[in-house]
Amino acid sequence: MKILFFSHDGKLGDAVVNTAFVDGVKQLDPGAELHALVSDVTENFWQMDRRVARVWRYKNPPLGEALRTSLALRRERFDYVVTWKERFSSEKTRLMLWLAAPTRGTLYEEGRLPGRTAHAIRKSSESLRLIYGARVDGIKVRYRLGLDLDPPSSFDAELPPQRPAILFNMFSAEPPKTIDVEHGARVLAGLAALAPQASLCLSCTDATEDAARRAIAASGTAGKTVNTEKNLRRLISLCARASLVVSTDTSLIHIASALDRPVLGIYFNDPVKSVEWAPLATHCAAVISRNRDTVNGFSLDEVLEKARGLLAQVPGVA
Image (cartoon, rainbow, N blue to C red; front, side, top):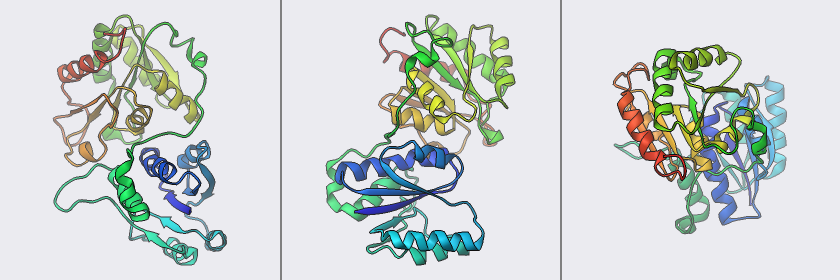
């Protein structure tokens, strides 16, 4: 079996969700050859994944390049192309799908359920069902990463290995999902009081490090910043190091779910997104802001209550 799947929207969170499809294929058909159509951060993500044989860069290319890529895909003679989307506005993408001509078909399954909201992982399970039928019922469909992590020692300066660690992420590329310094400081202070023996750290980048440092200063805690600028593997490894991950609605929630770390997601008041992109770790919880326009407005008491419950699942922390 030879399969090309689309992951060229440049969204890391979607790519992590798509690992459920990749993992399912490898459980059901270990010899299958998987290729990914990628762009931006998803290119880096899938290049690290040992289960993917080849990544194809595709981000609004000039017509000539799009045509060359399309013909190269045709020569691969894929059994299936999996897009998770039926209608593309780009004529070049529609041309590519026509030229790719997979021998068994193009799968557009979006995982939707009429009249209700389904979790995003459903698109993976339903796509697997279209290929492998009822055999899918015999496996657990879940996010799973296929990459090598940085050694724990790479974080020893920020997170001493003998202490549990709590990772807090305030930041998102989308302003409505970004927790401001004032609210972030309150969360940090509350987490420090819940688990005084734990190392507390904030994930940040060059653009957000100043805000992270201001939140730590305002909280009065001994929190640390961990800058993961242009280092996706370090961000994932940091998440793996954490005893608890608390994050606004970003890809870090899905990374924590893939690593099966205890995770608490904070969402703005959108009944669709808080279901479709909910965490899926063994131990997980979600808090919904009162506001529809911003994540700020969540209940600090609810965050700390649910964090306490998750920490109770981690030996040596609670």
